[in-house]
Length: 351
Image 1 (cartoon, rainbow, N blue to C red):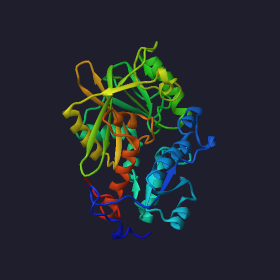
Image 2: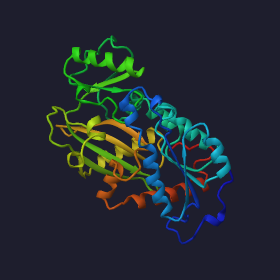
Image 3: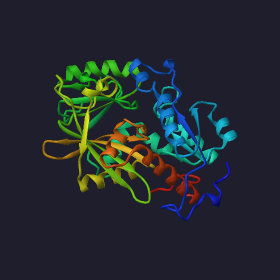
């Protein structure tokens, strides 16, 4: 694909660049047979609807917009239509989270400017245990954890109950139910016996941090900006408060998690460091637990987090007066700037 011409640079723009003329929105190609459980399918089934909503917002900026599923036909479509910028919304490829990194690799090969994290960042973040190890080695606080490859693996005696079990490669809060938190080894083993054979992947078991939870959104631009929101969980019969699958995908609006502003310059620096360590680009979301002593623990990393209106990212930004349309415009202009300046060609530079 040809690089953008210099006539797309306008001196009166805030950062010297204008919006692209054409955009392709790429979304997960979702079919029930791709997924190993109904819950995993539910977490992805609305991918096209979300893409259509985002495309409408892009079109309001007077940009020609097309939508393509992230499948084997994508390369031909991009080569023929040659969009100026691609918005990558693909979370799974044929039902697999870790294979979603194939999609930005396609953009890199074709030298198509795109919004979102590259193949390396997506690959790293698809392995939660690896994320935890990278953070720990970088001085970013995480909960004590252990990776289980079989239900009978030796249990680290230094782990303290309650423990929460997470699928190591699958996101979307899949299998994060009340039963995900175990208070004894017997319950933990039963959980592992269910998860490992069903999903054919390892399980990350980590100490459950009792306390509060904060989401941090980082938006790249001329400067990295971090926005925080603290989750206020609804009153339920659940002993442990966290964003479980039912809360995320099934709760009626009036029972949803609420958000309020949160600020701490120390946590802001941790977030910026985590963003760099994980090789993320453009935007990302980090979930952080705060224990009763005020200590932070990074529990989840989300490159290319849900971009559409109504998600935790847009809800958090709205607390600071940043609406969804402004976010999309900022990301598009930043992408034009980065690719014209060859900041992401042929591969992203280390930060």
